[in-house]
Image 1 (cartoon, rainbow, N blue to C red):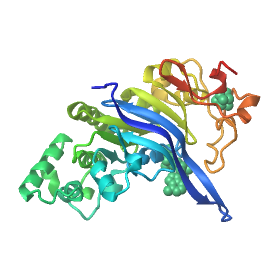
Image 2: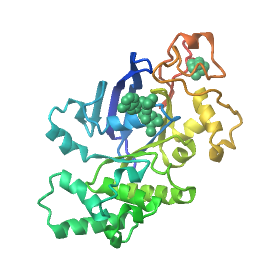
Image 3: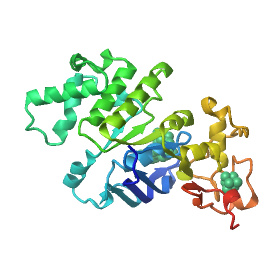
Image 4: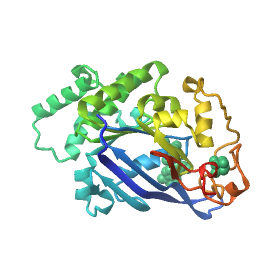
Length: 327
Ligand SMILES: Nc1ncnc2c1ncn2[C@@H]1O[C@H](COP(=O)(O)OP(=O)(O)O)[C@@H](O)[C@H]1O
Ligand code: SF4
Ligand SMILES: [Mg+2]
């Protein structure tokens, strides 16, 4: 059940990467640039945006405790960015788990499913667990994700894409997390399988009282699943609102363009914006509003002044000069 109690509070989070261009010149890539979000217990919070806009990096800041460039992150009231020792970090990281886009990438092909599912218990010092108790846990996890316990004897290559993603989900659930970051969890699956995996995630959320940070480039998927949605462009949030407000009172031109491009939800919308051009390089983003090179409404001010993310109506935030009444 969704509450108003915060479980994740990110304030001014930045994640920069040191990079070198093809000529060897040093630079800074601002993958996540000053993002603040609060996510509530039991909520499904969506992050959408085109590939390369920083969604995965943002998700990983919640796992990579302490390794952000700037900002603070509270998880369940604890300042995880202040953790100093590895022990503190490990004790805490069972609270937040990640489900990846490509389940194969995180399932060691040489290990049987039962060994893969035993890993989280081993890492988290549950060595004292008896073999029998471990087997019972593994059976429980498999059943929870809709697979027969016999699957524990299989190897990853003996399973379908959907089944492998179920294993990825089971592994994320092993330590009873509070938050699961679902990073494009169905993008690599056949369309026919996607709905099954999404339904499983929804079921599990209810049963286990989970909070989801759901990342996708597909606004259609996010619309059906999320309570609130943040739209990202080149490291920034450009619009953040309850999903209905985001769809029906869309304010940011980029969000309008994403909706126009999502065939399953675009029908009822009248205003269609077709994006032209590629996403600019995040290593060298446009000045002012980073979207001005592709925005059909760009004005002179957009080239020089960064629009701030502001609340324009209840819980509806947008970063666009068109919406700033003071200018
Ligand atoms: N370890 C890294 N070193 C340098 N650049 C990175 C690293 N990880 C991600 N990036 C860059 O950060 C930007 C955001 O990447 P990512 O978070 O993966 O975007 P998304 O998940 O939205 O596709 C991209 O330009 C990507 O190339
Ligand atoms: S600030 Fe200007 S360029 Fe940016 S989205 Fe708004 S109108 Fe378009
Ligand atoms: Mg990604």
